[in-house]
Length: 106
Picture 1 (cartoon, rainbow, N blue to C red):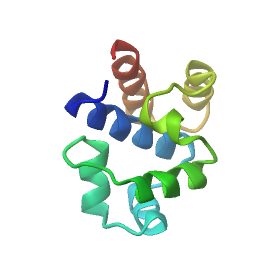
Picture 2 (picture 1 turned 90 degrees about the horizontal axis):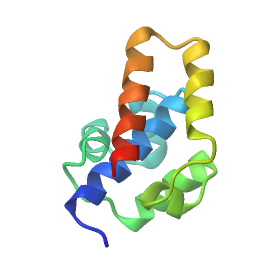
Picture 3 (picture 1 turned 90 degrees about the vertical axis):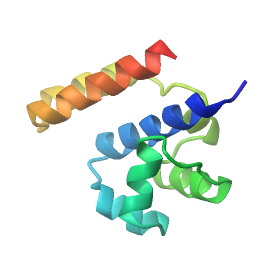
Picture 4 (picture 1 turned 180 degrees about the vertical axis):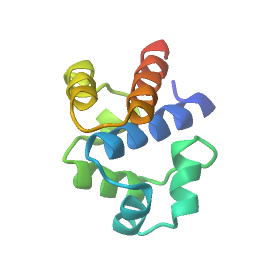
């Protein structure tokens, strides 16, 4: 079932999608119609996410709601590896790998 840990998982997935799509937190917050502070709180699992915002995010990232809420992304490791081989800084690669580890441990 869903619990408080689910919020962290949703936030992690939104952050992962944002990073994979090379969108800044500021740009995503504008596109979702929320403040950057609120998006930061979502990504860090400090606040609940409403369904309307999840639908906007799913549409923006062209994925299913279930992918954000509880699923895993197809070829997540492959996409992270591609990103690591591309134009990501070592800090971004470290964050991506950490997010993948967190998502696998849940």
